[in-house]
Image 1 (tube, helix red, strand yellow):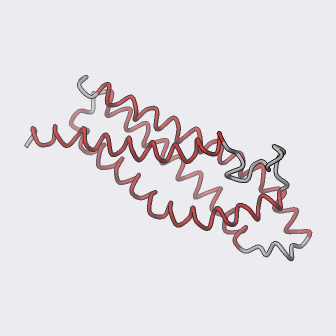
Image 2 (spheres, helix red, strand yellow):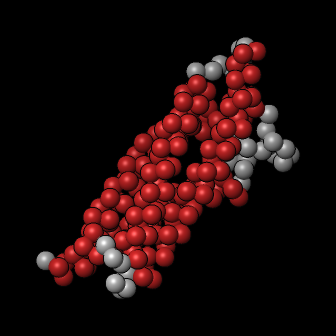
Image 3 (cartoon, rainbow, N blue to C red):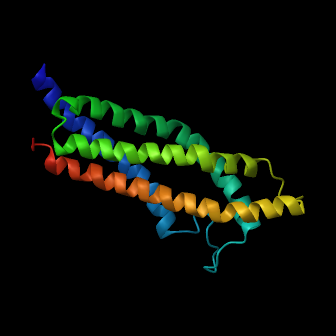
Length: 173
Protein backbone atom coordinates (compact mmCIF):
# COMPACT_ATOMS: atom_id res chain seq x y z
CA UNK A 1 0.00 0.00 0.00
CA UNK A 2 2.84 2.41 0.83
CA UNK A 3 4.39 1.76 -2.59
CA UNK A 4 1.12 2.77 -4.25
CA UNK A 5 0.85 5.93 -2.12
CA UNK A 6 4.46 6.78 -2.97
CA UNK A 7 3.55 6.58 -6.68
CA UNK A 8 0.38 8.66 -6.26
CA UNK A 9 2.03 11.50 -4.32
CA UNK A 10 4.04 12.92 -7.25
CA UNK A 11 1.00 12.71 -9.53
CA UNK A 12 -1.08 14.67 -7.02
CA UNK A 13 1.74 17.15 -6.62
CA UNK A 14 1.85 17.77 -10.36
CA UNK A 15 -1.94 18.17 -10.49
CA UNK A 16 -1.71 20.83 -7.77
CA UNK A 17 1.19 22.43 -9.64
CA UNK A 18 -0.85 22.55 -12.85
CA UNK A 19 -3.88 24.03 -11.08
CA UNK A 20 -1.82 26.55 -9.11
CA UNK A 21 0.02 27.51 -12.30
CA UNK A 22 -3.17 28.09 -14.25
CA UNK A 23 -4.62 30.13 -11.40
CA UNK A 24 -1.46 32.20 -10.97
CA UNK A 25 -1.40 32.66 -14.74
CA UNK A 26 -4.82 34.28 -14.68
CA UNK A 27 -3.56 36.76 -12.10
CA UNK A 28 -0.23 37.26 -13.86
CA UNK A 29 -2.27 38.25 -16.91
CA UNK A 30 -3.75 41.06 -14.83
CA UNK A 31 -0.27 42.32 -13.96
CA UNK A 32 1.15 42.03 -17.46
CA UNK A 33 -1.96 43.31 -19.25
CA UNK A 34 -3.97 45.60 -16.93
CA UNK A 35 -6.34 46.31 -19.82
CA UNK A 36 -7.63 42.74 -19.49
CA UNK A 37 -9.19 43.45 -16.10
CA UNK A 38 -10.22 47.00 -16.90
CA UNK A 39 -7.65 48.74 -14.76
CA UNK A 40 -6.25 50.91 -17.52
CA UNK A 41 -7.63 51.90 -20.90
CA UNK A 42 -5.95 51.57 -24.28
CA UNK A 43 -4.21 54.94 -23.78
CA UNK A 44 -2.53 53.61 -20.62
CA UNK A 45 -4.55 55.84 -18.29
CA UNK A 46 -6.45 54.58 -15.27
CA UNK A 47 -9.84 53.70 -16.64
CA UNK A 48 -12.66 55.99 -15.43
CA UNK A 49 -14.60 54.18 -12.72
CA UNK A 50 -17.91 53.98 -14.59
CA UNK A 51 -16.16 52.67 -17.72
CA UNK A 52 -14.29 50.16 -15.54
CA UNK A 53 -17.53 49.00 -13.86
CA UNK A 54 -19.24 48.43 -17.22
CA UNK A 55 -16.22 46.44 -18.36
CA UNK A 56 -16.09 44.58 -15.04
CA UNK A 57 -19.76 43.59 -15.29
CA UNK A 58 -18.92 41.65 -18.46
CA UNK A 59 -15.70 40.09 -17.10
CA UNK A 60 -17.37 39.00 -13.88
CA UNK A 61 -20.20 37.40 -15.85
CA UNK A 62 -17.92 34.82 -17.42
CA UNK A 63 -15.28 34.56 -14.66
CA UNK A 64 -17.94 33.79 -12.04
CA UNK A 65 -19.00 30.71 -14.01
CA UNK A 66 -15.43 29.52 -14.61
CA UNK A 67 -14.30 30.02 -11.02
CA UNK A 68 -17.44 28.26 -9.78
CA UNK A 69 -16.01 25.16 -11.45
CA UNK A 70 -12.28 25.77 -11.30
CA UNK A 71 -12.17 27.01 -7.68
CA UNK A 72 -13.45 23.77 -6.12
CA UNK A 73 -11.10 21.75 -8.35
CA UNK A 74 -8.11 23.75 -7.05
CA UNK A 75 -9.33 23.44 -3.48
CA UNK A 76 -9.85 19.66 -3.76
CA UNK A 77 -6.48 19.13 -5.41
CA UNK A 78 -4.76 20.90 -2.50
CA UNK A 79 -6.73 19.00 0.14
CA UNK A 80 -6.14 15.60 -1.46
CA UNK A 81 -2.41 16.25 -2.00
CA UNK A 82 -1.98 17.48 1.57
CA UNK A 83 -3.78 14.40 2.90
CA UNK A 84 -1.42 12.16 0.93
CA UNK A 85 1.57 14.00 2.43
CA UNK A 86 0.30 14.06 6.05
CA UNK A 87 2.42 11.05 7.01
CA UNK A 88 5.41 13.03 5.76
CA UNK A 89 4.51 16.05 7.86
CA UNK A 90 8.17 16.75 8.63
CA UNK A 91 9.03 17.11 4.95
CA UNK A 92 9.40 20.51 3.27
CA UNK A 93 6.85 19.45 0.64
CA UNK A 94 4.10 19.04 3.22
CA UNK A 95 4.77 22.48 4.70
CA UNK A 96 5.08 24.18 1.31
CA UNK A 97 1.78 22.64 0.20
CA UNK A 98 0.16 23.69 3.46
CA UNK A 99 1.46 27.27 3.08
CA UNK A 100 0.29 27.44 -0.55
CA UNK A 101 -3.09 26.09 0.51
CA UNK A 102 -3.24 28.79 3.20
CA UNK A 103 -2.63 31.44 0.54
CA UNK A 104 -5.41 29.97 -1.59
CA UNK A 105 -7.77 30.01 1.40
CA UNK A 106 -6.77 33.64 2.08
CA UNK A 107 -7.67 34.41 -1.53
CA UNK A 108 -11.07 32.74 -1.09
CA UNK A 109 -11.73 34.68 2.12
CA UNK A 110 -10.74 38.00 0.52
CA UNK A 111 -12.86 37.26 -2.53
CA UNK A 112 -15.88 36.18 -0.51
CA UNK A 113 -15.78 39.01 2.00
CA UNK A 114 -14.68 41.92 -0.17
CA UNK A 115 -14.89 41.25 -3.90
CA UNK A 116 -18.13 39.30 -4.32
CA UNK A 117 -20.30 42.01 -2.65
CA UNK A 118 -18.80 44.55 -5.09
CA UNK A 119 -19.42 42.20 -8.02
CA UNK A 120 -23.04 41.66 -6.95
CA UNK A 121 -23.62 45.41 -6.80
CA UNK A 122 -22.09 45.96 -10.25
CA UNK A 123 -24.28 43.17 -11.67
CA UNK A 124 -27.38 45.21 -10.80
CA UNK A 125 -26.33 48.37 -12.64
CA UNK A 126 -27.81 49.64 -15.88
CA UNK A 127 -24.98 51.72 -17.31
CA UNK A 128 -27.29 53.68 -19.60
CA UNK A 129 -29.18 55.04 -16.59
CA UNK A 130 -26.77 55.57 -13.69
CA UNK A 131 -27.76 57.86 -10.84
CA UNK A 132 -25.32 60.23 -9.13
CA UNK A 133 -25.37 57.95 -6.08
CA UNK A 134 -24.44 54.92 -8.18
CA UNK A 135 -21.59 56.82 -9.84
CA UNK A 136 -20.30 57.88 -6.42
CA UNK A 137 -20.46 54.31 -5.16
CA UNK A 138 -18.63 53.02 -8.25
CA UNK A 139 -15.94 55.68 -7.74
CA UNK A 140 -15.55 54.44 -4.16
CA UNK A 141 -15.39 50.75 -5.15
CA UNK A 142 -12.90 51.02 -8.01
CA UNK A 143 -9.75 51.56 -5.86
CA UNK A 144 -10.87 48.78 -3.51
CA UNK A 145 -11.14 46.34 -6.41
CA UNK A 146 -7.64 47.26 -7.57
CA UNK A 147 -6.33 46.61 -4.02
CA UNK A 148 -8.25 43.33 -3.84
CA UNK A 149 -6.74 42.09 -7.05
CA UNK A 150 -3.24 43.17 -6.11
CA UNK A 151 -3.56 41.02 -2.99
CA UNK A 152 -5.06 38.14 -4.94
CA UNK A 153 -2.27 38.35 -7.52
CA UNK A 154 0.35 37.98 -4.80
CA UNK A 155 -1.55 35.16 -3.07
CA UNK A 156 -1.83 33.14 -6.28
CA UNK A 157 1.68 33.79 -7.61
CA UNK A 158 3.37 33.13 -4.27
CA UNK A 159 1.25 29.98 -3.86
CA UNK A 160 2.41 28.79 -7.27
CA UNK A 161 6.06 29.48 -6.40
CA UNK A 162 5.70 27.44 -3.20
CA UNK A 163 4.12 24.53 -5.07
CA UNK A 164 6.68 24.80 -7.88
CA UNK A 165 9.47 24.24 -5.33
CA UNK A 166 7.91 20.97 -4.17
CA UNK A 167 9.06 18.64 -6.98
CA UNK A 168 12.65 19.59 -6.22
CA UNK A 169 12.19 18.68 -2.56
CA UNK A 170 9.98 15.60 -2.82
CA UNK A 171 12.73 13.15 -1.86
CA UNK A 172 13.82 15.15 1.18
CA UNK A 173 12.53 14.03 4.53
